[in-house]
Image (cartoon, rainbow, N blue to C red; front, side):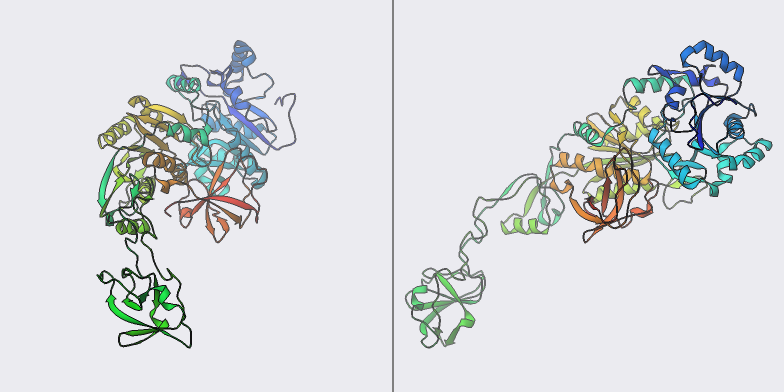
Length: 617
């Protein structure tokens, strides 16, 4: 086999672009040579595989491809070793077997030629796993095992040979048979999807033209969706006991001073301070008690020289007095008290308006009403208050594999956890879920459900799943059927990167990753700022806390990564099961640990980090 001129022998893992097949659904056009952005599919893929020791091209007929090379000129495979299928008419399995048999490397990373958007970072991650584990490496996406891109090894050859002999050419069966020998990576990147038909090719070029495959930064994505959000212009008036957790619609001003009159802070006697002059431990000053006032009562008597009035806590301080002496600091016999210490004016004296004066703005628009705010409203005499109407949200899960909780789970199905994850989180955040639905992997079904959500007067529409570019990733098609605006498709973040944002009939729409943790992170990073702008509520502002990392987090990347964690007493503990498809380790988390991009060695144990607290959790 021709190994090429500049082959790098430093690594023992090669790459292979699978360019065989009849290409019947492309009307005979060779997918490897389909034009895209001033290059062709196979070259776009090869540029992302440069770290491998060699890049092989698997073809079904060497002579035919050599003729094609002559026709396409500089787009041909010159300088790259061609490997002809030893097992023809047997699909990708035959090509994989041929390359593994004839290559010198122990492992080969296979990428089909119809996957031009394979992710460079994903390729690097898979190669890194091979270097560490020396085992086959494959991906799990949305709970499904993916044969491509995948690292196949020479140790797999006996199983591949037996499968060929059985005339079983399904790669999924091969992966299932040796599943325990494989390193499985949870991943939610779509890898570009397979482009199998002329229609899919045209749609792909359209995305390229509209730059929809260019993932934008998290900051840009949030800004774009907020441009589609309008503040709610609706309020409702509720009684005090129904206000908890709601957002004030308007500033609230005090109707009177608090307290509205001078009052006693304790049980004692109201006197004139000048009457206590000369009092000491040996010589008491005698005062005549002329009245007793309880809280809620008033006295019409004006206190004169050498007179006092008995007061209970909260009672109005009578005219003519300027201080209150504690009952335990006097001696009383009949209607006479003896004072043994000089008193200062306005001692133990709560003046009118000491808490607040009339006309003071005590609560502002956007504040969340809690127990303290409710008590303050009551102290001002308010029995009701105006609050922002709750945001009305629609949540629609997509997936033919979804089964409702409580039903029997058949093979290949999963329970519809994401729908309840999102709806419960919205309820925690004070949002009313007015439409909750699950649809099959059918763009028209999703379109119908979104239109129903609009008829339910939803302020926000959320969909879950179907945002990659696989055959059953239907959300983008649905946006097209609706005539909805797409603000972005793909965000540079982990997890949740394939998400979309847009609007329909002036209603903002967010379409989340189908992976459970990706869904949750999309919720936290996008829904909270949307709710803040809609309601003006301060409750949706994110709290950040600093903490010390309990254990080293080694993973790095080119995009921000959000890791489930728990902040407690200044210590940050991250959960080891942090793949985007795992839901169980979200339990007990109260924050997200952000790992910024470009950190070569991850985050070290004992390092100071900042975490994003999960509100209302």
